[in-house]
Length: 291
Length: 161
Image (cartoon, rainbow over all chains, first blue to last red; front, side, top):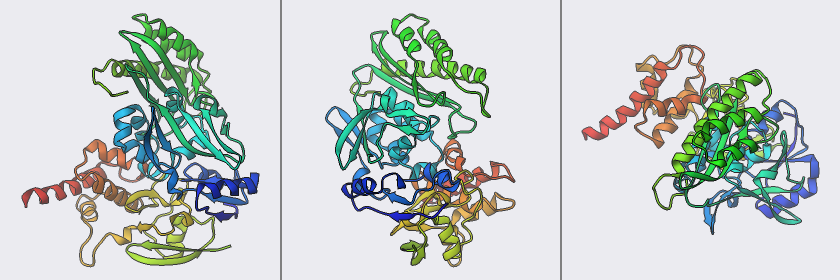
């Protein structure tokens, strides 16, 4: 790593002031599980590192009206094991449980992961499928950004230079909603070769609204619009047809993990699996549980 | 400029003056001579630098030392008591769960964190927990057996009393 100065603000207000003052000479660091590797490779060399890892005011999971709010500095392992998340959003708990190794999940934070905006990591597609919003703060004030417009491009988010992501807000879905996250990777916990997050709201046996979001196939998580449309028609063969459409419209790139054609096959298989699991959860008779 | 870092290592209060870009791994090895903290890939893949921070397994090569101010660190050197190995260490010996031994400190510390949280893990639980620790000699069968047995042993004792 190239030398830098290390500053540790005592609270969020101070953190906002520091990042506003230092501008693009500074980088924020939370758990650093994505940042330290690129610092070590000298892909970036900030003059200042502002550590917010120990700002405990941003480490929480709580119900907030009709939302669940997760503080940006909540670790992946806290989300994975939270009784509230397991009860209300089992898909999120599954997703977090498959992210990296336990060591990474113990120190890495949900906010840091999202701000890194690597399209192959897991929380992005899952939170787009769940229609989440992120909350950001700066010296100029606070604002909310829909998850769907948060990812701008590869490693690039909608946050301004002086903004800090403070929380993720996930709305409780309507009744008969089920969701699922499925990823394919070389080893358990590794980066996705392809992944898909699905959230389905059912009306009897028919789908009212399906959100199908593909990960690791483009520069950002992408909604599979054609697949959603086909699924929402509600034909008996809808699951297979939608999975086929998702594979068709996806634009994965060939790389060391597989060819474009191979990845399209993977997308078809995991989309079918995720749609089936989400539909099953949506029809689950358990009352008051928003899968 | 170096900053003062105060933390607890293996039960002892320690302090060092560290550069901001030093990782916890570098400080534990260089400043405190704890060479059981191995230096493998240094990119967070191999798990050989695993230590416990407040009881949780962490890859010390991916943690800035200054972020651990006031925390409680356990390395492999902190496990054995004066006259006996820690039960997980003993179990690794009993099961021949290593060859070159380079991955062993990380494996044992990850296993300790798992067994503290889940004293009777399934084989699947053990494999998942150890998925961030690479062994390039033996494969993983003996290691998984050693961890399962160490977990079982604790339970057997509890059941027989």
